[in-house]
Amino acid sequence: MVTEMDRRNPIIGISGNIIIDQGGIFPGYERAYVNNNYIHSVVRAGGVPVILPVVTDHKIIYQQVENIDGLIVSGGQDVNPLLYGEEPETKQGGIFPERDEFDQLLIKTTIEAGKPVLAICRGIQILNVAYGGTLYQDVSNKEGAFVKHEQAGGPSYATHTIQIEKGSLLETILGSECRTNSFHHQAVKDIAPGFKVTATAKDGIVEAIEKEDAYFVLGVQFHPEMMAEKHENMMNLFKALINVAKKLE
Ligand code: MN
Image (cartoon, rainbow, N blue to C red; front, side, top):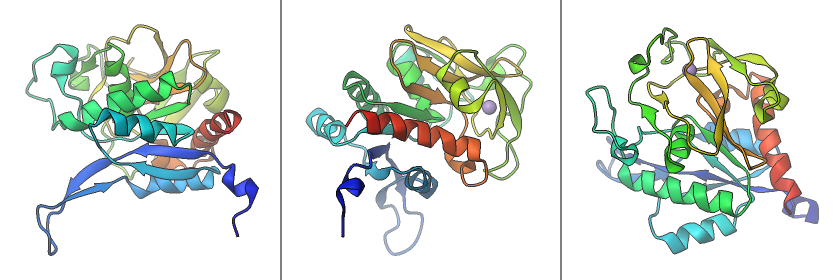
């Protein structure tokens, strides 16, 4: 039986992606999906996960946002560099322009509705670009970059250090320094107007950003959903998102 308490658990939308079947009986078919550890993290943190499939009809995106209390922007493809005024360079990876359009509208609509946003990996990148920021098409383009940001170890391993800004939202969740996993070859270059950098790796690569005039619009370059099962501090990111989503009810 569903109780009133259950109904009050916040609904957390997770932006979807599309994967193309490589084999089986429908090779070449498109499937809408998210990695399952986003779902597990939201459930364990006390939220109700809902996958938001990639659509480009604005009316549908507005209704997706109406029906959620908080948003997780999931990882995936590189952002199209034309969106931030650059031609693709040789190290630029694969793009998905429909998803860029979807994510940008989904993010802006959710923020305008005053709902909390946790943007992960590609999520921090598209969040920054959506509000006028730029990216390094490859971290090696940044002068002085020396940290291995595409780690070779398993997804739950914390492999590099991040330093977190005093007084930031992220500091209240993770403290002033911690270790994270790292699976990215691009990174935030110029921060979008109205945002601030709130964590960096030892080589200065941006690892977190926050929107200045919002209580909970947080982008992280690492993958807390891959660490949350083994690292309680990463689970606390999801709990923090869900606590804010709850207060809005
Ligand atoms: Mn990194």
